[in-house]
Amino acid sequence: MIATVGESLGVGALAETFVVERPDGCRQVLKRMHRHCAYDPVLVAMFEHEGKLLRRFDHAAIPRWVASYRDDAGVPHLLVERVAGRALGVVLAQGPSPEAVAASWGRALFDALAYVHACPDREGVALGVVHRDVSPGNVVARDDGTVSLVDFGIATSRWRMDPERGVLKGTRGYMAPEVITGEGAIDGRADVFAAGVLLYELLTGRRLYGGTATASMMSTVEAPVPSVREHRPDVSPELDALVQRCLAKLGPERPTAAEARDALGT
Image 1 (cartoon, rainbow, N blue to C red):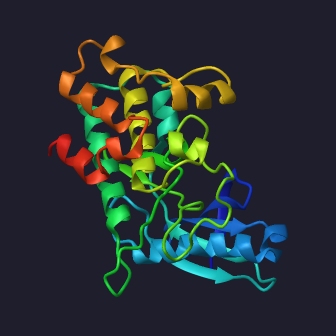
Image 2: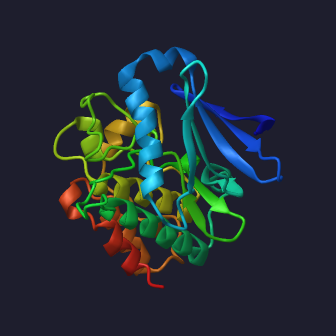
């Protein structure tokens, strides 16, 4: 038996998320689908896909799956491990991070993405997972000094390809150019782009591209990739170069998540 504690963690288009407490005092996170969404089989498939992925994953930077179930009214629920820490958006609001801290978090995030992108099914065949919403609200700076990648709600994989191609999904300012334009394959390198945006913002304390949502998306597609060292001359040329590679306009010109992780060292 669980009891909801504190305030809701947030309400999305598909579900609401709460912190819940077990009788033994252990706190976990409960994601409850909105009742009106539970009548749409496409939305239910999307919600249950997240639980299926989390049940397959086994990585320290990804919250562990606890349970997936439906209540008496047939509404799907997902229960996962609670991560203690702050959303990266809170960290970004405090200004630039030291290079060593940003690089350490970046390496941990790229490591999680490398694992996700290569994760196989039980037969050993790669699932082709793409998170699709690597953003300040979905990366947690943990109390133990590392980071966690959360919320695979709009992720795609071989288990569930995107049935709504052409519909923008993700967080404005963190979508790769190919996601915005709908041109070219959307694979793991779209996540690498988003992680590159986060790394740029951690290092500079400023948005990659400012303006309205529309202006930001146009800049993502068309504007030159800025240099971190324009705003932080103390940042190493090697790290600046890696960030710019991650922000390349064309997916094939970006490193894979594993390559970006390795470039950041140990």
